[in-house]
Amino acid sequence: MSKSRLAQAVEEPAMRAVRSLLVVALVAAMLVPSAAAAAAVTGRAGSRPAASVNGSPRAIVDWSLIAQNSIVVAAKKFPGEGAVLMGITHAAIYDATVAVEGGFRPYAVAPQVPRGSSLDAAVAAAAHRVLVGLFPDQQGGAGGLDATYAAYLATIPDGQRKTDGIALGEQVAEGILRLRADDGRNTVVPYVQPPPGPGVYEPTGPVVLGTNLPQVRPLVLRSAAQFRPDGPSPLTSREYGEDFNEVKRLGRADSAVRTPEQTATALFWTDNDIAQWNRGMLRLAAREGLDAAQTARMLAMAHVAGGDAMIACFEAKYHYLFWRPIQAIPRADTDGNPATAPDPAWVPLRTTPPFPEYPSAHACHSGAVTGVLASLLGSGPVNFTLDSLVTGQTRSYRHFQDALREVNNARVWAGFHFRTSDEEGATLGRQVAEFVRAHAFQPVS
Image 1 (cartoon, rainbow, N blue to C red):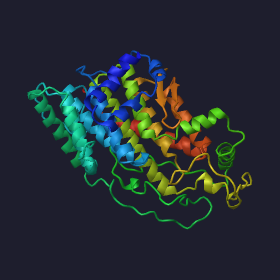
Image 2 (tube, one colour):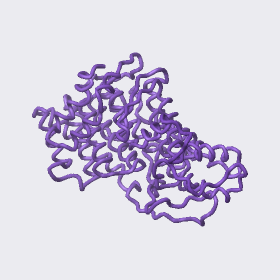
Image 3 (cartoon, rainbow, N blue to C red):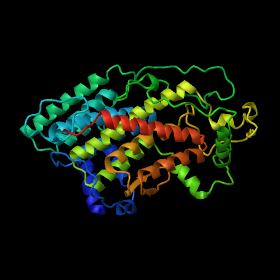
């Protein structure tokens, strides 16, 4: 796909709708960070699911970006919470879209739809109302959600179609907000430190994040513990010794054996993965030529699976409370494993995330997203790009699994995780993706 076509499909609608709001314009600009990245985009045929109406995905793209900005930039939610909030918002966008376009069963809300309702108005109303419900402090002000919404509606011709679309979207949003009321996401769960000792996590900084996520009601899963993995490798095992020595060598800040490419990969994946994957999926939707229903379905399925994967991941994290390499390596003389040796001076390449180690949250989330994308677009060759605002680099992948494999490597090379934690986190994510695919967002038979 050419730069001009990609800009028309992804950048221009968002900029046109909110050109007076600099914060949203910044997010839209971040979507395609370079002409080189856009030039690398090509099409791939023969993998698109069927939908009944070929509407434009303009509104879905625009409000996905606005949601990303509200959750990641304005609210500064860390990826564990951010994934759940993106799932909730994109479920509303999806239900509003399929109410107008058809082709797929609703996630939760099936409103009455007057014939000819405006898709753009329905999506905008649904997303705006949900985001205001999630972030009431973002509602007002010159750059707030109400101003963004008003500017967006001004681009849609007045008339009955617009009026009906707004009413439809608000009905969807109210249903989604009722569904998620008292779902546990706002519950305050203090961190309680168990007795310290070998293998036991202790906070690496002044805060511990995600303690409430095990209590959050999943979006599709039956329970947060549904796919709980078996647990980290025993400290005295050969597997633990191998994982320990790998991250000790390659994950330390001043590693002499980590290559420049490995360092670049580790840093690439320290971007906020919620925004990183969302930007990549919007480019993918444009490249594949997905229509409105297909785009809304892909984004909703990926973000809902990603949210549930984070809930499941943090349930496992706080169940096992396993120590991080930054704790394990200096204290290796306490682990009882003859294959490990302590290094009191060891520090990771970047600051360790403030929550327990096992399993890897990034791998859980990326496993879920790549699992969804592979189920929708196939596991064969694909021209797929992701960018990093940390390194300013754009990377291309031939298979979704290639990106997941790189995530697993990157978390070791950054000094954050033992490899087993990444591999089992990725497996958990794929299990969540398969369950979501089988139980939600189904085509109309």
